[in-house]
Length: 303
Image (cartoon, rainbow, N blue to C red; front, side):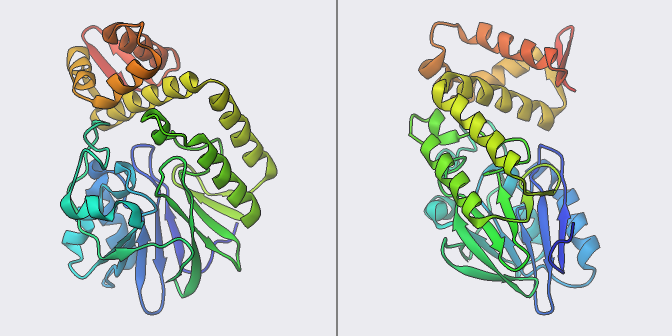
């Protein structure tokens, strides 16, 4: 596996997205900054790699909290940093609408940050002395982009494609038709025909037809049963909170759920016949059976 010269991938745990560092002759850039509770580590990774050189540009593939939660910390450490975001939510960032940006309804953290410009689909941007294409990749997030370096055919796929699937299709939880956008983005990736894929989560991998086929099968299953997707999404949100907190009382866990709008939204649309507490009990038990959570007495733990 040979990534383009000057490209370094910081593979993070699932609470934070991967960070991709570009070191060029004239400038240095980072794509995605991870979750806010990992921001100190993100800063240290960047400083260790750059030494005395500044970080000049910060790019966000999309504005979910696990991809931009370290923005504020990096902007504090590098005051001249220029931050570029997809244009669709720029006004929400300017006014800092944490509800519309989904940080409040998902119960996730994201310190306020500023932006300086846009990552426009159809444009190109110079990173580590090479031109990267910006492509719109809606589905998981309606404003997400992916980045392609055409000579090496390296694709930064964010959460549009992982080696074993793709990210939760959040617009579907809000009642919007977005599965078709996921399909269109998978079609785009197939046309781009990358050689290497740097995903939003998990290790860098070589593109293979079976990777895309597996994601298409997963998408087809969700299209046939949107409730299956909603069930999966609810468990992802629960697991994310466990990753963030590591341990808390089950009573506090339920209180957090009650204050997090997405759970009521999902339950009302897909599982209205099940009382909230009973539903969360069922989902938590599933996480325990899958060995990704643990319950002991009054406590629930990440596992």
